Image 1 (cartoon, rainbow, N blue to C red):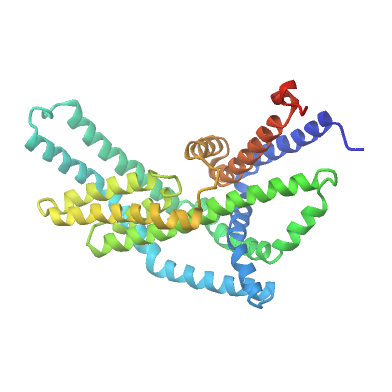
Image 2: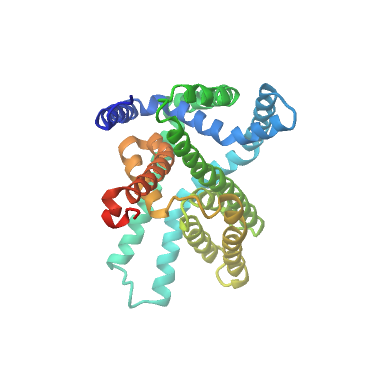
Length: 354
């Protein structure tokens, strides 16, 4: 005979509470392992595909690891130094850009911005704040011994954890399945499959969309000669994870930089606008329907709420676990709604069969 519902809720509530407490106190410690698990989960379908082609699990993991190392070395030599340099230059150039904006507004709208007006002072203050805070952030990230040590540990531990988890992924899933309560194993498997489908559609799908769009934006903007094009493409690609935000932020940033750089040459400004417009058309009509699909079940508002709450409570590691937790809560909520609609509480006497 299974445990009463009240006792089951108590036990599962204790598990959830312990998990949140561990995440609260050990967030920084478990960050490499959370990242490693996320990478292994992301790459598991690739390993399964290689296994179907005849490779063993060990060989498939080795192939993925070698390709990942090659890609990382190429990025470290070609992309990352340029990205860091452009980020530093953008932070240092921001006050000049805002001064140019101020002069532009003064020249064309003298009645709006007086020499001692609040708007003029605000623009100067914003530029100085971005330069000082941005410089402090970069200096802290690059000069702090503890930060460098943490970065080194991430680069060492995360790949090792990823490889081991990817190698043993199927065995771990089978082992967890053996530990499921026998009375509830079918329901848990069903819910887990829905959570996996949601995560696979969103994380793997949106991750691929972000990579493709970020690369497209960066390469296209650099080809047209836009300063800081790599940084803009990187920012737009990452923010594409949140629907519409990447296009809006990246587009405004790119068009704003293009207006300062190409002022008077409207053709190149229109080209920059066309790059983001075409990116949105490709994303909306090709990439998202093909890679993400329509049945993900993660509403943008729900996603933003989860990222905000978990990010504020648990920091960066909280943002990493926010999407899986949001997907799981969404699946459980739909399951609870289905159970409620099938119950007598919802149907009442009128819903009984004659």
